[in-house]
Length: 218
Image (cartoon, rainbow, N blue to C red; front, side):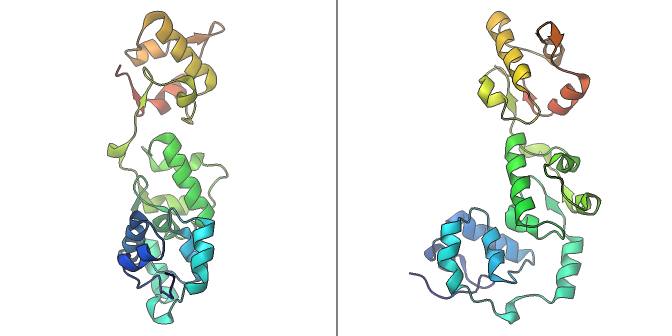
Protein backbone atom coordinates (compact mmCIF):
# COMPACT_ATOMS: atom_id res chain seq x y z
CA UNK A 1 0.00 0.00 0.00
CA UNK A 2 1.46 3.31 -1.06
CA UNK A 3 1.71 6.01 1.56
CA UNK A 4 3.61 9.28 2.00
CA UNK A 5 7.25 8.79 2.97
CA UNK A 6 10.48 10.71 3.37
CA UNK A 7 13.32 8.78 1.66
CA UNK A 8 15.75 10.34 4.14
CA UNK A 9 14.07 8.70 7.14
CA UNK A 10 11.99 5.75 5.92
CA UNK A 11 13.30 2.44 7.29
CA UNK A 12 14.01 -0.58 5.11
CA UNK A 13 10.72 -2.29 6.00
CA UNK A 14 8.76 0.75 4.82
CA UNK A 15 10.77 0.97 1.61
CA UNK A 16 10.18 -2.71 0.84
CA UNK A 17 6.45 -2.30 1.47
CA UNK A 18 6.49 0.59 -0.98
CA UNK A 19 7.80 -1.71 -3.70
CA UNK A 20 11.60 -1.57 -3.44
CA UNK A 21 13.53 -4.83 -3.48
CA UNK A 22 15.37 -5.55 -0.20
CA UNK A 23 18.75 -4.91 -1.83
CA UNK A 24 17.47 -1.55 -3.11
CA UNK A 25 16.36 -0.60 0.41
CA UNK A 26 19.78 -1.66 1.69
CA UNK A 27 21.41 0.61 -0.91
CA UNK A 28 19.34 3.55 0.32
CA UNK A 29 20.46 2.81 3.88
CA UNK A 30 24.15 2.69 2.93
CA UNK A 31 23.81 5.98 1.08
CA UNK A 32 22.25 7.70 4.08
CA UNK A 33 24.74 6.16 6.52
CA UNK A 34 27.54 7.82 4.57
CA UNK A 35 25.85 11.20 4.87
CA UNK A 36 23.94 11.17 1.60
CA UNK A 37 20.59 12.91 1.43
CA UNK A 38 17.76 13.10 -1.08
CA UNK A 39 17.30 16.81 -1.62
CA UNK A 40 14.51 16.62 -4.20
CA UNK A 41 12.11 13.97 -5.46
CA UNK A 42 14.10 13.33 -8.63
CA UNK A 43 17.12 12.24 -6.54
CA UNK A 44 15.21 9.10 -5.56
CA UNK A 45 15.22 8.04 -9.21
CA UNK A 46 18.99 7.39 -8.83
CA UNK A 47 18.46 4.44 -6.48
CA UNK A 48 20.17 1.47 -8.11
CA UNK A 49 17.55 -0.77 -9.71
CA UNK A 50 14.84 1.92 -9.75
CA UNK A 51 12.56 1.56 -12.78
CA UNK A 52 10.63 4.37 -14.44
CA UNK A 53 7.33 2.72 -13.59
CA UNK A 54 8.19 2.31 -9.89
CA UNK A 55 9.45 5.87 -9.58
CA UNK A 56 6.32 7.20 -11.33
CA UNK A 57 4.16 5.33 -8.83
CA UNK A 58 6.16 6.54 -5.82
CA UNK A 59 6.81 10.14 -6.85
CA UNK A 60 3.44 11.56 -5.65
CA UNK A 61 4.09 10.06 -2.20
CA UNK A 62 7.63 11.37 -1.71
CA UNK A 63 7.66 14.08 0.96
CA UNK A 64 11.11 15.45 1.76
CA UNK A 65 11.32 17.47 4.93
CA UNK A 66 13.85 20.33 4.95
CA UNK A 67 14.99 19.06 8.36
CA UNK A 68 16.26 15.81 6.84
CA UNK A 69 18.54 17.40 4.24
CA UNK A 70 21.99 18.80 4.84
CA UNK A 71 22.89 22.43 4.40
CA UNK A 72 24.52 23.05 1.03
CA UNK A 73 27.83 24.07 2.62
CA UNK A 74 28.05 20.86 4.65
CA UNK A 75 27.00 18.84 1.62
CA UNK A 76 29.91 20.27 -0.36
CA UNK A 77 32.41 19.43 2.38
CA UNK A 78 31.24 15.83 2.58
CA UNK A 79 31.31 15.41 -1.18
CA UNK A 80 34.78 16.91 -1.32
CA UNK A 81 36.16 14.37 1.15
CA UNK A 82 34.35 11.25 -0.08
CA UNK A 83 36.39 8.25 -1.26
CA UNK A 84 34.55 5.35 -2.92
CA UNK A 85 35.54 1.90 -4.16
CA UNK A 86 34.72 1.84 -7.87
CA UNK A 87 33.96 -1.87 -7.72
CA UNK A 88 31.33 -1.74 -4.99
CA UNK A 89 29.75 1.73 -5.20
CA UNK A 90 26.19 1.80 -6.50
CA UNK A 91 24.56 4.59 -8.50
CA UNK A 92 23.40 6.46 -5.42
CA UNK A 93 26.87 6.50 -3.94
CA UNK A 94 28.45 7.51 -7.24
CA UNK A 95 26.08 10.48 -7.46
CA UNK A 96 27.43 11.54 -4.08
CA UNK A 97 30.63 12.65 -5.83
CA UNK A 98 30.48 16.22 -6.97
CA UNK A 99 30.30 16.30 -10.77
CA UNK A 100 28.70 12.85 -11.23
CA UNK A 101 25.02 12.80 -12.14
CA UNK A 102 22.55 10.00 -12.74
CA UNK A 103 23.53 9.37 -16.38
CA UNK A 104 27.25 9.22 -15.62
CA UNK A 105 26.71 6.98 -12.60
CA UNK A 106 24.73 4.47 -14.66
CA UNK A 107 27.35 4.64 -17.40
CA UNK A 108 30.08 3.79 -14.86
CA UNK A 109 28.08 0.80 -13.60
CA UNK A 110 27.49 -0.46 -17.16
CA UNK A 111 31.18 -0.20 -18.01
CA UNK A 112 32.14 -1.90 -14.75
CA UNK A 113 29.94 -4.87 -15.68
CA UNK A 114 31.50 -5.10 -19.14
CA UNK A 115 35.01 -4.97 -17.73
CA UNK A 116 34.38 -7.36 -14.90
CA UNK A 117 35.51 -4.64 -12.51
CA UNK A 118 38.01 -1.81 -12.46
CA UNK A 119 41.68 -2.50 -11.78
CA UNK A 120 42.60 1.20 -11.94
CA UNK A 121 40.67 4.41 -11.47
CA UNK A 122 42.31 5.64 -14.68
CA UNK A 123 39.95 3.33 -16.57
CA UNK A 124 37.26 5.92 -15.96
CA UNK A 125 38.92 7.89 -18.75
CA UNK A 126 37.78 5.18 -21.18
CA UNK A 127 34.08 5.93 -20.72
CA UNK A 128 32.08 7.21 -23.67
CA UNK A 129 30.99 9.95 -23.57
CA UNK A 130 33.90 11.18 -21.44
CA UNK A 131 33.26 12.37 -17.90
CA UNK A 132 33.67 16.10 -17.56
CA UNK A 133 36.15 17.42 -14.98
CA UNK A 134 37.77 13.99 -14.80
CA UNK A 135 40.90 15.22 -13.02
CA UNK A 136 38.82 16.48 -10.10
CA UNK A 137 36.71 13.31 -9.93
CA UNK A 138 39.38 10.59 -10.04
CA UNK A 139 40.87 11.43 -6.58
CA UNK A 140 37.53 10.44 -5.03
CA UNK A 141 37.95 6.78 -6.05
CA UNK A 142 39.99 3.70 -5.38
CA UNK A 143 39.78 0.46 -7.39
CA UNK A 144 40.03 -2.71 -5.29
CA UNK A 145 40.97 -5.46 -7.78
CA UNK A 146 40.17 -8.34 -5.42
CA UNK A 147 36.62 -8.60 -6.76
CA UNK A 148 37.47 -8.73 -10.48
CA UNK A 149 35.48 -11.15 -12.63
CA UNK A 150 38.01 -13.04 -14.73
CA UNK A 151 37.79 -13.67 -18.45
CA UNK A 152 38.09 -17.44 -18.96
CA UNK A 153 39.31 -17.46 -22.54
CA UNK A 154 39.54 -21.26 -22.72
CA UNK A 155 35.85 -21.67 -21.90
CA UNK A 156 33.98 -18.71 -23.37
CA UNK A 157 32.33 -18.44 -26.78
CA UNK A 158 33.26 -15.70 -29.23
CA UNK A 159 30.05 -13.82 -28.41
CA UNK A 160 30.81 -13.95 -24.70
CA UNK A 161 34.41 -12.80 -25.14
CA UNK A 162 33.58 -9.80 -27.32
CA UNK A 163 31.34 -8.41 -24.58
CA UNK A 164 34.56 -7.42 -22.86
CA UNK A 165 35.64 -3.95 -24.06
CA UNK A 166 39.27 -5.05 -24.44
CA UNK A 167 38.59 -7.89 -26.89
CA UNK A 168 37.67 -7.40 -30.56
CA UNK A 169 35.81 -9.92 -32.69
CA UNK A 170 38.95 -10.86 -34.62
CA UNK A 171 40.85 -11.47 -31.36
CA UNK A 172 38.06 -13.57 -29.87
CA UNK A 173 37.75 -15.58 -33.08
CA UNK A 174 41.52 -16.17 -33.15
CA UNK A 175 41.34 -17.48 -29.57
CA UNK A 176 38.50 -19.85 -30.44
CA UNK A 177 40.22 -21.09 -33.61
CA UNK A 178 43.45 -21.72 -31.69
CA UNK A 179 41.55 -23.74 -29.09
CA UNK A 180 39.94 -25.85 -31.78
CA UNK A 181 43.28 -26.53 -33.46
CA UNK A 182 45.63 -27.08 -30.53
CA UNK A 183 43.62 -27.04 -27.32
CA UNK A 184 43.71 -24.64 -24.42
CA UNK A 185 45.86 -21.51 -24.42
CA UNK A 186 48.17 -21.79 -21.44
CA UNK A 187 50.05 -18.50 -21.27
CA UNK A 188 50.38 -14.96 -22.54
CA UNK A 189 53.29 -16.10 -24.69
CA UNK A 190 50.92 -18.34 -26.60
CA UNK A 191 48.29 -15.63 -26.77
CA UNK A 192 50.65 -13.13 -28.37
CA UNK A 193 51.38 -15.52 -31.27
CA UNK A 194 47.75 -15.68 -32.45
CA UNK A 195 47.11 -14.44 -35.97
CA UNK A 196 44.23 -13.52 -38.24
CA UNK A 197 44.87 -13.30 -41.99
CA UNK A 198 48.57 -13.83 -41.23
CA UNK A 199 48.66 -10.77 -38.96
CA UNK A 200 49.21 -10.82 -35.21
CA UNK A 201 45.95 -9.90 -33.48
CA UNK A 202 47.36 -8.73 -30.13
CA UNK A 203 49.65 -5.77 -29.62
CA UNK A 204 51.73 -5.30 -26.48
CA UNK A 205 49.26 -2.59 -25.43
CA UNK A 206 46.33 -4.99 -25.90
CA UNK A 207 48.00 -7.62 -23.75
CA UNK A 208 48.89 -5.13 -21.02
CA UNK A 209 45.26 -4.05 -20.72
CA UNK A 210 43.96 -7.61 -20.75
CA UNK A 211 46.54 -9.06 -18.33
CA UNK A 212 44.59 -8.42 -15.08
CA UNK A 213 41.44 -10.01 -16.52
CA UNK A 214 42.54 -13.11 -18.39
CA UNK A 215 42.45 -16.56 -16.85
CA UNK A 216 44.09 -19.49 -18.66
CA UNK A 217 42.23 -22.01 -16.53
CA UNK A 218 40.65 -24.77 -18.60
